[in-house]
Length: 193
Image (tube, rainbow, N blue to C red; front, side, top):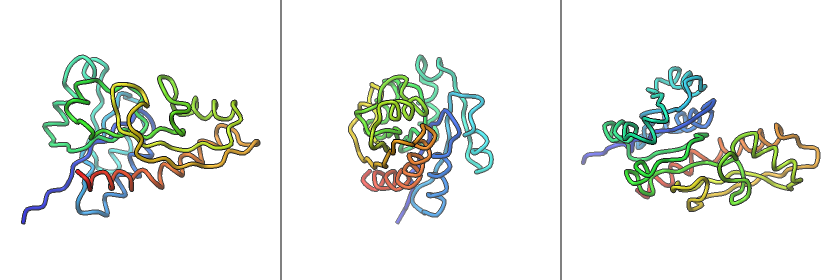
């Protein structure tokens, strides 16, 4: 009986902590392999993480991503089955969505539909949550479509926001949720493919 691992690619624009958490999670599994990190930021921390973890990393330009099919070709050449966005800031082009229908997911550091959309990422989200005196925040894992943060919600988890919390406090609470839930949700989705 032949058994092939599902191959995933992770896109990140920043430090790559979720990319590393997912990679380490699947190192212990025999059915999934993280094959590639991709980033639009030549200074991104995810590049160093990729080197340390032995994961090849591709840095690409806006033109290669949005105007040409270069990134899709890279994914197809590596037989990538599934795409994970883990702190990736650019809108996904239609060519990539068509190549991977319902096979691209994103994690957002808030409880969508609140605090989503263009420009709402990282500290901007946490600052807005604190400024608006929200009682909770959290994470949303969702499928990706042609619009920022509007794809079908797969999973949400929340954390309390207290009146004394700073945006940095909220960021720490949200990151705990990301690392706790994101790898498991990726695995659950992959089991259905």
